[in-house]
Image 1: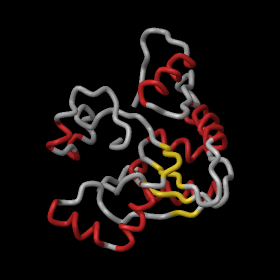
Image 2: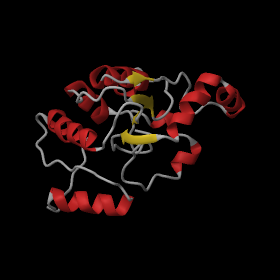
Image 3: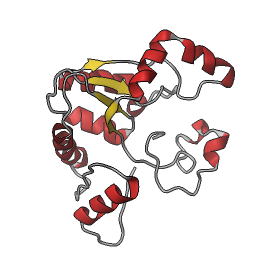
Image 4: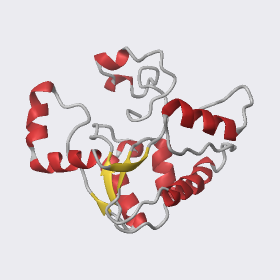
Length: 186
């Protein structure tokens, strides 16, 4: 996966535009070369996590994808007591960058936090959704989503244009074909 900005724009300008366009409180844009990319991302992510004011009982949502996996593998700062939650359910893909509960566990170990796991698919069949939602463990975790203080997510290719994962695209997601990036689905 590669995100390329063809016209030179200073990272600070991109950061400011992202914050304004998406209503973010904070963002980091890293000017880097491909070698050591994930190590380069880990430092600003760690700084943002520290500056976010996370404390015992704060909720940190973890997404998935190669960048999120790489940042977690490179290391996160120690912030004890943070509750770690997956930002979504899992999918039946074997690739390591899809293992959302593994990310939550590893991030919780690094931060000294409390991992919470979801044992539900990303898109359950309609007839199973209500059963999942009535499960006490799922309801407890989903309630934490309303308390998310910070989310660690990556930006990747929309699955509609990513041939490796095109088989997991739902019919409603096909309408998103013109988008240029995918945040939580990737």
